[in-house]
Length: 409
Ligand SMILES: *Cc1c(COP(=O)(O)O)cnc(C)c1O
Image 1: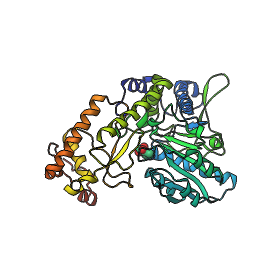
Image 2 (image 1 turned 135 degrees about the vertical axis):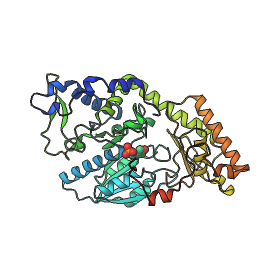
Image 3 (image 1 turned 180 degrees about the vertical axis):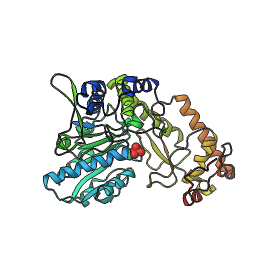
Image 4 (image 1 turned 90 degrees about the vertical axis):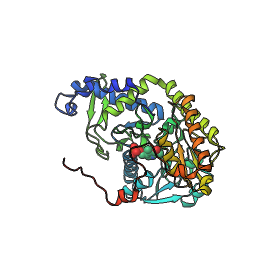
């Protein structure tokens, strides 16, 4: 997403939702007073189950990274309950950087495996697999914007040592209506609703990183959980003896996933699939337009994003950073340039489903003009940005002598 659709904002600010005290459902006799909100949580979980094919969801995690931690804690709880002694989590080098950080925070040793041809390599995976492996964390589409080709083989390998499969689905806007993680055999998936459903990434607001699980992990989900009683009324269930406990205050970022709920209801299954189609089509269109102007290290059909490299401009002394700064002058948000680590001088382009052919063309034209200028007048690009209130910042000084308080005026 690049935009906040208005209908989702309106839905989330309905007074019945926004004026309700968050403890209402927890006071005696309060559940009926919070019936609408409880139903919204229940319905959000149910729709996400349908989108992903998972058995159950928790809406509590408030960001992708927190969803990951929740997921890995669920996996740890599962292994503990079975008496499994597991100490390692495998993370491919094409995974998102939060994955190894998460596994480390949860107390696991991280085993890195190298990708081959941009893909998780089943042979490299098999070489490090043994009974001490708790899980594999897989980002799909991976950070190169590529779909992992060997999923069935990978699932089979992990199953052979009772290791679980974690799917980093932060970029599920490349998969909706096309792939369900539950159908492929994954045990845990987190989604970034603030990238995929009704709110943009880095939009300045809070996030929502709900986690879906397979049936065997359901008993460990965070509580309290919203339940629907036989008579159709909604309530909270606190008696969850195997739960890993609460991972967020109240029910997570409620108003964020209300926006996602509005988005899902408005789009329907078909609309979500169409959003995915456009996200993927737009990225491939841009890739085709930029292919002859930058280096494309993994040049094939991409998913919702692709990674290019500014390495051909090295001989002019122009780097990815310079192109990113020059784009600011033209009024664009700069692409990610320090990630993924496996591509030098990388530029990651993710146009999203909401751009039109015209805006995609305008961006490509402007970027191509910058690249051509870099060849004849590198200095002009190295000096960018020229039109912003601040030019290039001294990033080292900014990090070393950080000023985090404001002068009293
Ligand atoms: C954005 C992202 C994350 C982290 O999500 P946050 O909400 O920023 O914590 C994790 N994995 C992938 C693949 C992502 O794109």
